[in-house]
Amino acid sequence: MRLDSLFLENFRNYQSQKVDFHPVCNVIWGENAQGKTNLLEAMVCLSCGRSHRTRTDRELIRFGEGGFLLEGTVRTRDRAFISRIEAGAGRKKKISVNKVPAKSASELSGVLNTVFFSPEDLQLIREGAAARRRFMDASLCQLRPRYAAALAEYQRLHEHKTRLLRDCAERPDLMATLPDFNLRMAEAGAALIHYRSRFARLLGQYAAPAHLECSGGREALEITYTTVKTVTDPFGDHQTLVGQLLEHQRTHYSAEISSRQCLSGPHKDDLEVSLNGVSARSFASQGQTRTAALSMKLAAREIHREIIGEYPVLLLDDVLSELDPRRQEYVLNRLGSGQVFITCCEEDRLHSLLKGNVYRVSGGVVLPG
Ligand code: ATP
Ligand code: MG
Image 1: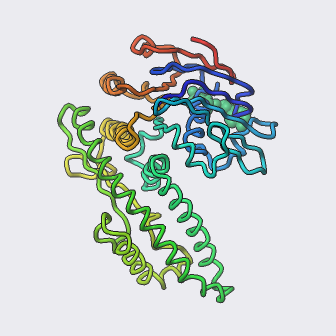
Image 2: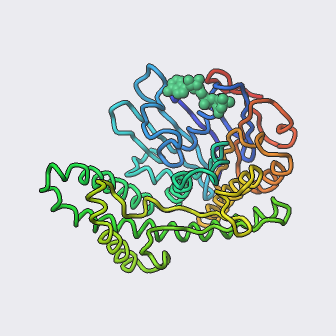
């Protein structure tokens, strides 16, 4: 799949910009704060309906304007698609594919998929579980519309239940609704566990050989999915998972009431990453952390290809310059048939390494070379 062109209007620091892209490689360079990341962010939005950097669309609107428009021409499954997002402050955003209004943002993921990699992701290994959950969620939401729906439902219920637990001391009548919340959370939670366990298994299968090769054959990477304690087998059937989640809720009932917090459910899930049998989070060196994070991102790209039959668009934001020449070469050799967008600050040797188009971004304007 590839993004052939992009139109941005009043998006971040772009006023009105149309860009045509190279089918394989696009290098985007420019000084700091000119709009390189914003351009990639627009592509992320077109692949999943929202930004990876913010949860509020309002921030995406150019200062002083009332709304933004993004339109991308995408080639996938041997067909051309036009994905479009129009958002205005206080209005529900309008999404369409080939001029047909979309029922949900997941229709965008049926057209364009992206894997975004930035220097912050190099911390995927070191940070808390939330970073790794975001990574799983971002991939799975694009690949599995049912996952996206279950996640949205789960998050809604989680927020609701948290409010309920907070208010129930003053309003004991609210407690009557708790069993219903718990059941619906267990149902949605079981769906999350179903998809995450399979994603984690595939991730390990693809990331391990990448990491082994990138570490010169020295390090074995393993990824283990961890979820709610009572779940004995995350690959188990739906009803068993629901039962085990309900069991966990029962044993945490009084703790939830006294702490006034939602303590039970897969919102604490994690991916444990180990190198040669020891926890990467606690023991990995800087270089090992980079290699492992890189391997996980490239693995996500392979999972997309396995599930949808085409490589997703790879967005490398400022990341190549953070890698040493050996890792750079490793990434560039793996691009294969996919399309890639690479941002960097200087017009450095990257350009000579890659065949494709070069763009310069300055003050929210994209210029050739
Ligand atoms: P760096 O090399 O430092 O990563 P960059 O080229 O990637 O820089 P971006 O993050 O794309 O920079 O753009 C940042 C600029 O966009 C900032 O100057 C910021 O003020 C501006 N900006 C962000 N949001 C908006 C907005 N809603 N309206 C107008 N300008 C915005
Ligand atoms: Mg940037």
